[in-house]
Length: 134
Image (cartoon, rainbow, N blue to C red; front, side, top):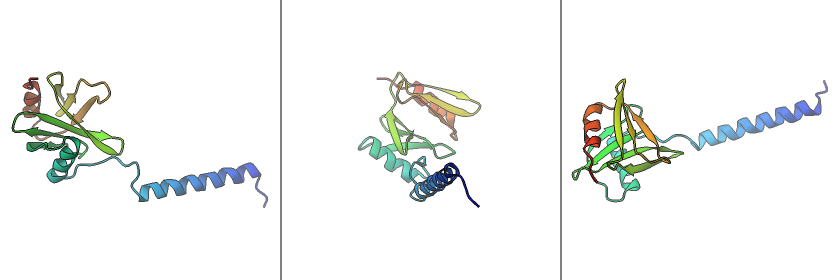
């Protein structure tokens, strides 16, 4: 059985692509970060803003994002950015609204954008965000 060279090349390329994808998956390259616990949220907050010491933490039900509040009232939003978590201290320009039980936080930064969080008490977080003063 003779296979045309183009078909052999296609099959070889397909096998190579699948092998590289399996290798990347094994190394967990490119996977979206998750925040599985309060302790992980604390560590991620300290990495994003050195010395950030939250007294209140709201974890997204899916573990994708988190809101953290310090005693002084500063609020940090953590969300995925590529294969890492990125954090932003919310300013008075930030806004929040609730749609179908989901808190939507807009940082007012075009490059950071908005985040959707399913939290246990979204209205309390919305009020805290609305109370931010610069």
